Structure formats: C-alpha cells, structure tokens
Length: 185
Image 1: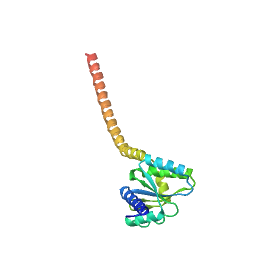
Image 2 (image 1 turned 180 degrees about the vertical axis):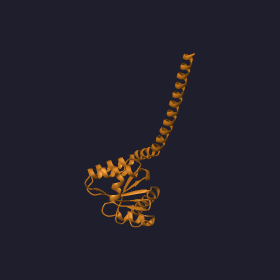
Image 3 (image 1 turned 135 degrees about the vertical axis):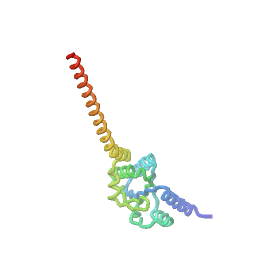
Image 4 (image 1 turned 90 degrees about the horizontal axis):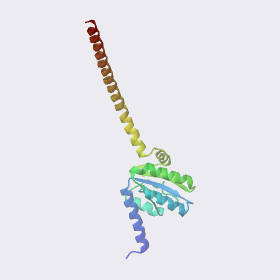
C-alpha cells in the first residue's frame, strides 16, 4: 500500500499532465507576497472565464512536464510558480485579466507561456494582452471584407439610378415633343 504523500504527489502530477494535454495555452505566473484573499479572487475570476490556476511545488511541476516530454520550461519554473490553464480561444481575455491583476498586486508576475508547442516570453504575453477582444477582431475582419462589397454595390446602384434618370429624361423629352406636336395641330 502506498503512502498518502506519494498518492498525493501522483495525483498532482496526473492533474498537471491531464490539464496540459487538454488545453492549448498555459501561462506561468509568480505570486510572491500575494494575499490568499486576493489569490482566491483571481481563482474565481479565472473560473468564471473557464480557466484555472494550479499551484504546486516546482519539483512536482518539473516531474509532470518531464513525464509528458515537455522540455525547456525550466526558465519559467523558478520561485513560487503557478500555471494558468487556458483555452486557446480565451487567451487574450485571460492575459488581460492576469496583467490587470499584476498591476493591483505587487508580487504577482507573468513569467511566460506555452501556446501549443511554442514558448512565449513576458513581452509577447504583454502584446497579446493589448489585442482587442475576439468580438471586435471578428467585426473588423467582417467590415474589411464587406467594405469593398458595399462599395461595389453602391457603384452598381449608382449606374442603375443614372440609367433610370436617363430613361425618365427621354420620357419627359418625348412627352414635351408630343405636346408640341399636338399644339401645332
């Protein structure tokens, strides 16, 4: 029978590896001197957004990552380390939340991230956090596609309107000419 401590460590490693494989984005954070109350507020905010933060000993995090053959994350696993597991669709919003939280809590800092197989540093995460939300990006893309089309439709409409004015002008000219012919009779 295994000891409780060993079972606990195995469960932690299992949780890290399963979360790592299920979600595409993982953000490494440091949380020195952040109060438990503020940290729980962050947990609740992340939970509402469909993300979670997981804190464990660095040795267990390294062991979990070694077990799934993830290397070169050692630079992010230093000091107090937490991993925020994020859906790829939600990465911009979560980065904004984490950067806002770091401004309000002095000891909280983003270390870096792993998006799929790509490693991102602090600067790249900061750029991601400054992107507009997904809804606005989609609206901008739709407007970019629709703008030339609406211009084309307006040009076609303008040609049609000019044609109708031309026909109306010819009709008016003919009616005036017929009125003049009727007046001479």
